[in-house]
Amino acid sequence: MPKGCLFFLCLGIVYMFRPNMSFVAPFQEKIVIGMFFLGAILCLSFSWLFHTVYCHSEGVSRVFSKLDYSGIAFLIMGSFVPWLYYFLSGVVLTLHFMISEGFLRATTMGQMGWLFLMATLYITGACLYAARIPERFFPGKCDIWFHSHQLFHVFVVAGAFVHFHGVSNLQEFHYTVGGCAEDGNV
Image 1 (spheres, rainbow, N blue to C red):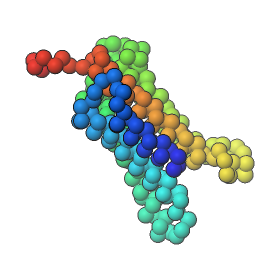
Image 2 (image 1 turned 180 degrees about the vertical axis):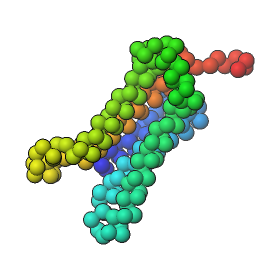
Image 3 (image 1 turned 90 degrees about the vertical axis):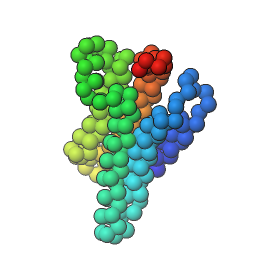
């Protein structure tokens, strides 16, 4: 998990300070995207810390277990911030866009496809972990590598990256196609 945390830390730094953007995002949008990165980094670092120290003692395990679960909540909250920013009230407008423009257009132009892929990755990882797959079918063979908890973490990192990609596309779409006119009549 330190690799996932470092990946999002580096990606966040590069993204927030890259000079070669095709548009210049205002400070408030950097904060919005930064909230996602903060949630991802907290989630992955708390998980990494928990897995590093949980065998120390029962008390330490309890404290870091709470941090691990808190990190999941931080990732969820941080993930919602950009979608709410670009879609305002989120679910209502997204459903309206899907109904008025059609499912295919919503998944491509509206970037909903990335949201569905992210949800699929998160849910698949959680289901593998809850069902203890593959160690259920291969007892003793997946004790070190490829056990359900590791797969869960891989799916979480992949889902968070897919989420970032979708939000990046939303931000670019906002500036190139779907943004409001800057004529003062808003």
